[in-house]
Amino acid sequence: MEKKRKDKNLVVQKYGGSSVADRRSIERVAERVISSAKRGKKIIVVVSAMGKSTDELISLAKKINPEPSDREMDMLVSTGEQISCSLLAMSIHKRGFGAVSFTGPQVGIITDTYHTQAKILKIETERIRQQLENKTIVIVAGFQGISTALEITTLGRGGSDLSAVALAVALGAETCEIYTDVEGIYTADPRKISDANKLSFISYDEMLELASAGAQVMHTRAVEVAKKFNVRLHVRSSFSKKEGTLIMGQTPLIEETVVRGITLTENEAKITICDVPDKPGIAAFVFDKLAKIGVNIDMIVQNVSRRKMTDISFTVSNKNLNKTIKKTEEIAAKIKAGKVNSNKNIAKILVVGIGMKSHSGVAARCFSVLAKNKINIDMISTSEISISCIVNKNIGKKALAVLHAEFGLGKGRRKKRER
Ligand code: ASP
Ligand code: MG
Image (cartoon, rainbow, N blue to C red):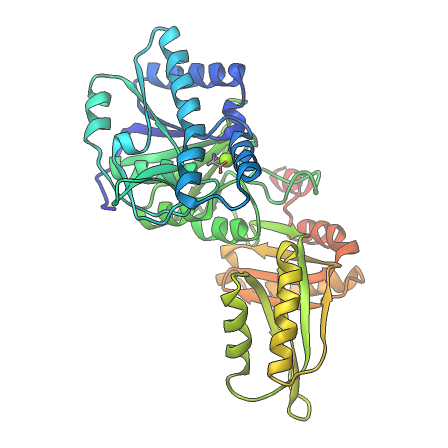
């Protein structure tokens, strides 16, 4: 994709599945789009499939054939977005405005040939531009494109975010608005921390860390593309008029923020290979074999060796636990290691903030507040802008709460500071 000069008057708005879940929601989105058009904006709308309809199509397919081909899956699931985009166009027409809906292939979203996981190679913008010139609202079905082999492809689950960001890049929109059912990005999941704050802004890198830890508000690749081309994202609710969270490169330094947000992940398990011979090539062998079965390893910790033996622990998503244990046992036998243990009773806390680059002692502060609260840390890993700790699952929520308070992220603290 090429970088275009930014056009301030051009807006890409993406509405997720929950924002177009039924007739009423589609009509609400139509009103919203029209009100932006009335403010003189040129609008490209990207929609997801209605509600949970993609899941329903996938489960229907699997009843008919438990192992459907990827090509036919793309033929099937791409229809979800075609339904929502045409209904939205009709709803806008009824309100007296011009709109036209397109599938990804119709507007020339060209992808590679990897069905169900395709990557966008380029976007031919001519057709969209013509419509925008005529003051027509352009609605594009998200999540799909046409491959270089002229087949319909999809971009991976949640891929409408990516369609929206890619269109914003190709057309030169300055901002891409991501409408969803939450009001933005929070300092912590508000379902777990009642005084979590909505952030006014967050950097791309911080958002990428949070997204990789499972904050499902934004598609990770979409944030990567936005970062690469410097497209500002505005994550906001389609159910309210409130401003949401801006995701951008350089966040304003209004106040000293060391930690931007904290997540708690409770769906990972830890696997330990005991008594691993401590010699070159062993770690490479273990993780190469695990990579081959397609499991994503998260944290890895290797202990200091005692008498030429060491323990290696790592975490994986619970859903891959059984196959990972099986494979790990085979590997342990091959390398003449000892037992393989696993523990599902863990939680991962991820503390994220670009302020960590310039402030020292953040890790020490995390560990000491956990210690003060008698929370034992099982594993630790860090990046330039994050610290993650594995703790016992029973105290995961408590660990989240004490860290959230320690870094002043709760509502109470903020009010006090403003006074
Ligand atoms: N409808 C697709 C999905 O559910 C794409 C999207 O929602 O972004 O994964
Ligand atoms: Mg979605």
